[in-house]
Length: 81
Image (cartoon, rainbow, N blue to C red):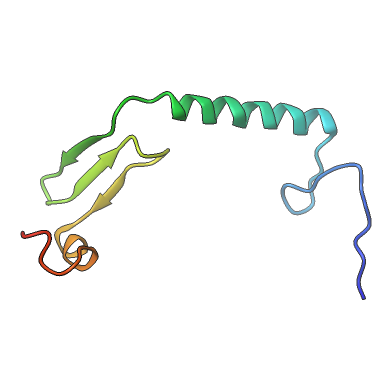
C-alpha cells in the first residue's frame, strides 16, 4: 500500500510549509481566539427590515434565518408566523 513520509514541517496550504516555531505561534493565536469567543456575553437577536432574524453571540458569525427557513426548520406547528 501507500505510505506517507514523515516530515518535520506541516503543510497548512498546498505548497507551503510552516516551521515548528510558526506552528506554535499559530496554535497560540487560535487558543487566544477561542478563549475570547468563550468569554462573550449572552446571545442577542436582531430583526432586519427584510424579515430575517439574526442571532449574534453563538459563534464567530451570526446565524440568520428568514421566514421560509423558520417554517421549514421548525417541527410541525411549533412556530407560527
